[in-house]
Image (cartoon, rainbow, N blue to C red; front, side, top):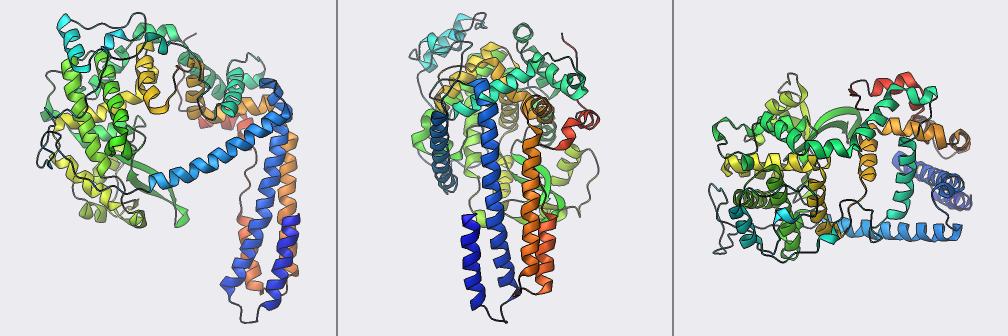
Length: 550
């Protein structure tokens, strides 16, 4: 309240200095500032109430920790978060303008590229067959083994560094509260409450999802076979197919097919509110992520270790899928070289990142990509050329179209399907888990494999969060906390309306606009109420097909 009182005092001083000619925009700005302070206070109060509830109800359930330790840790994490946010803002705004340079002669490479005989990394590596997992797939011949040792070398690390099961090490940042949340979610997912609440279809599907994810025996028995069948349906992964047919390859069709599996590769496309007119939803395009977390990892020499680990990871997975080692290495080099080129096309000028136009206009500006066909493949319906879309950063898409034009089809197919395979390794057996952990140890410093339940909890939460949320709310959430916060919010909004009515220096038109804005504010407190209504919750996941495995 001290903040509000101080602001009102300052506001009165300002109002006394205003003149009848004060503009409408100036008055609105003053009103918005008042709303900012009031609702900022609301947020602080709401967070305090929520935090008090969390400490009193959840922490004893997970930890036996003194309150002072909890508060100190929370304060430190908040400071670290603010510092890291500042660092990352600067990190992502760096501009890189580099051309592709051949390692052999240090000169730009132009024209059609297949990247053969162009190794981009030399480093020490022990053969993939030595991964510390019982039943690891071995190479077919001594020749394969010898080639891998000749290429990668013998220096690596002890097998004991990568147990097949483990826990998040103490060096993992932010583990404290994340672990509390995970443990709570795990206990919810393993609950055996037989009331009607737990017989809700949506919750049953979430539980079945978790159980299937945790079925280690089935994953080990199936190995890579399910993924191999899927790759064959998608035209085959060239690194695994010695007779791969390039004439049948259609990169746009493959990109659209992979989008249906929730993979944004080369192009990120979604439907969302127009940021300049939030009442309207519109198709939007942007550049997507790379295989490494930042384009700088591909382009800056000091990050060469990350590129080496990435290349090694591709070879690991390809060999585990059945590729001969020599071919796996050669194709992996082509993949990483292509992705390095792609990194150079990443956003350069954020000031020119918003462009609203029709599909017809987009095709004229970026003719190398058939945007209408892509959308029709993804959305499954006809799209008019006059359909409005938003494009973020034309320069990226112009560079992408040029890159696609002179890159050979085998490299494109290898890259598309590598990104797809890398997203599916969590669904495979423990050999792939260890290969992935070997990669992430270099990238993140995490030395141990997290327990499988943690990954399964993440999967269920990301795909069926409202169902797991319903379980949590019914078991652990105090409805009174939500109601108290709602009443407090309504009281503040009512007080704001009363203050508006009593202010004499604002005309009626401005008051009306401010009141309409306040009335239009949506209240999202705690959780959406529909998750406690079984019929509505079931409808949200009606398209999820459940297969009983237990």
